[in-house]
Image (tube, rainbow, N blue to C red; front, side):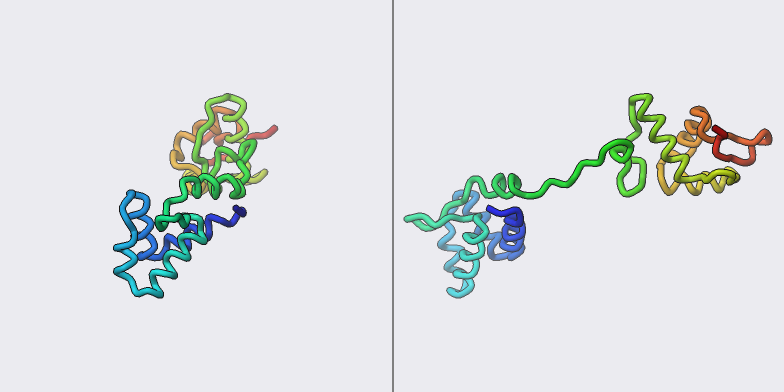
Length: 166
């Protein structure tokens, strides 16, 4: 089986008639009556699609379900690379998991701070909230964590935020 075997499986199962035939086979029901209800050329195309995808195997008695087709397809399919470092806490640029380890939290917060502010830039609270909302769900909590961690600072008047000086 090759790494694109899943494509043939999905293509075969995208056909309504093939899905019905395959469902009967999976449930241990005879598929001959279902195939008999199709035009002969259609029945041949359905069985050809299901067998070429490896979903059904031809036997002396007709067809049987291939017991390992899905496991085999998954075994050879390429696995997506898992994010590492701070990226593992973000999905599509949004913070989806807040880390429990202090070191990871610090890195995540530093990443968020660098994404919302540049050196010398000052933002009002509504402006910083708007930028944070593009990255996090709980804007107020993350803004507070950024200040508590010393990554951003509020002006004395409390009306603006900026990156903390190193």
